[in-house]
Length: 351
Ligand code: NAP
Ligand code: ZN
Ligand code: ZN
Image (cartoon, rainbow, N blue to C red; front, side):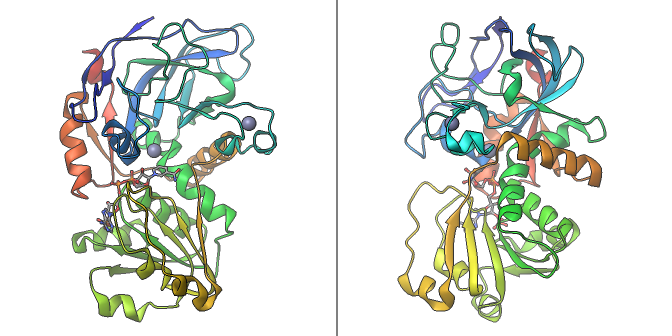
């Protein structure tokens, strides 16, 4: 199926129209007409080859919501006309120990990412998967998520990356009533971390470099906001938190945030800066602290998160853009100037 899309053809070229082909649905596939696609900072990192693993042309986009247009003969979860969502993965080995535990994102063999992964069904796409900055996508139903019509569709799109990437570690490390939690960075991931930690009953402190985001931080659910550029304010928070979720996309001093943890506290990194972050040994010895990481979430947990959001009325705060504003949106992301997720209205690609 010929499909309109936007691609970057090299690390230095802007995103521009690029026609692709989607496969015809196989028996277990769902064909989805994409209505909205969120803009994750990972899209920017990969379009510009920050992580050194990009294959060009690259069609980013892994926060996809849309309407099912056709299903293969063996599909049971979806029918034409249903709403559906697709996040960061479109396949995995399905048999290894991680997959058996519903942790497909940690598949021991191959977790096929929604874009920039070798396509297990090559032949039409040129060998790599292509993401959601496109008119339609064809995905195995096992990696397709159900979406309630109770949430605004555009505001729901970023849940399948920004949402699950923050929900999963908060759940894994059992954040709840009584937990003292810090969230570092108020961007796409950070604003969802604040909402979820608040919804789980934790006391939430937001650490931001942007003083102008303080009021929004409180509106989104933070009990306290600290401007991290203020050393005296940071010093007052030393050794006070059980758990810190770091969503920062760029170079920063991780030791300044490890210092916020009290005895046996854990800092989980979900931000993926281009460069390594040096950790001072004494940042960890002091208070027997842990420094951990977390990647997105499995299919079942992503569905659980979407259902939780529908039940609690939680969605993302978004700025809707046209596809031809994507390059400008990337520049604004680099300036921490997004409130708090860009979402592309895919009607702008079709017109
Ligand atoms: P984003 O919307 O651009 O937000 C990042 C925020 O980090 C900014 O808004 C800013 O918040 C803060 N920040 C930026 N530069 C900083 C600096 N030098 N020092 C301190 N704070 C800084 O990005 P996003 O889409 O939320 O993604 C965040 C990161 O997570 C990216 O690296 C992305 O690739 C990664 N990611 C990882 C996973 C995973 O599975 N682990 C999944 C999705 C995304 P303030 O203005 O509040 O300071
Ligand atoms: Zn993402
Ligand atoms: Zn596996």
